[in-house]
Amino acid sequence: MIHPDYKSGKTLHEQIEEEIKQHIINGILKPDEQLPSVRELSISLTVNPNTVQRAYKQLEQDGFIYSIKGKGNFVANAAEKIGDARKEALIGELRAAIRELCFLGTDKSELCKIIEKIYSEKEEQL
Image (tube, rainbow, N blue to C red; front, side, top):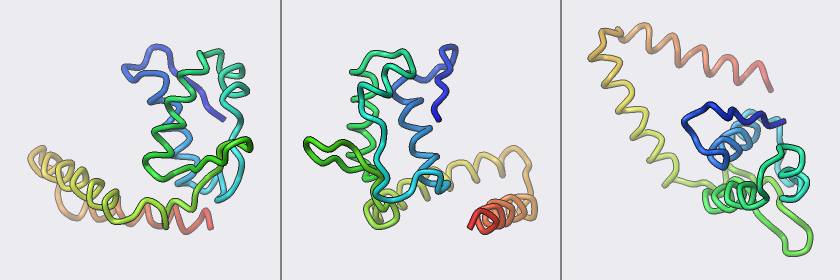
């Protein structure tokens, strides 16, 4: 499920968070599906439980997961929970990336092809 890269510039908790987030976004983890416990995941990844707890805490703050005391952590219905604030943040990142790509000489038609490809890949997954 999660494969930390110990040579990466990102911290382990950031890597765990990003991989879980991608699994949720790509539909690999479904809404209300239970995640491994902090202890289980820390053992399987051979990392400190605090590392996993930190990733889970951030995912919960971002609306990707929710916790039920005594039961564990579960995948939230991200589309409903994340809301407009996260969308606006991502659009801001996208604008910055597009500006940089334009500066580097990427033309509009190439960017449109990339966007179309991403949407068609998502449709194929459904």
